[in-house]
Length: 274
Image (tube, rainbow, N blue to C red; front, side, top):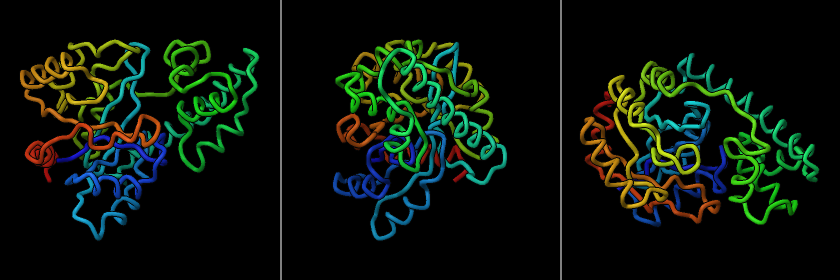
């Protein structure tokens, strides 16, 4: 079984890729996908960490997209990390994430909260600054009691300290992924605009444009959503995938809690020409 959605300290996870690889082995997985937000920088560490193991590394990424003014995430697998257009878009995303973090902290300061961007940078380390890093700093400063409260009250889409980010339309993300030799799977379609769901019309459009899969089994999808998206994937000829969306300790070390079987991973590879 494969976990096709994992995060590390290269984006907003709390474990290194090496630690994720070790945990995957301990939990009996056949492979994991490296899908940090808007970066391919973790591939080398992943391949190195898996050298003396039977674990298969699936190179991937989770793109930040935006639809109707709200964040929407698009998974991609088997991209060429040296593709020029891909590298240019990832640089734009990285550059704007830094400034976005600064602006969110400035909004919190204007609201009277004692938080510093320097501390957010320290929490993020050498990696991309993301909203969970700001949430961690808010918990540490006593502004909120837990990171979920930081999102719910302040930094989620439409929150009082929210700042929009540079992000492609999901259809444009799909085109970029295809041009870079990859295949596209829509991440957690039941998680959009807070408790909303991605419109079926968009999923249908992306399927018609060449998207190959839908993340059906996800720890934040309930049984009804899993049944609904499984049927939708079947109707549209999409591969059903399952994954933990692991962020290390941030959401309870759930690596491997939802998985994709080997036959479906092989189907992903075939559609990517592997």
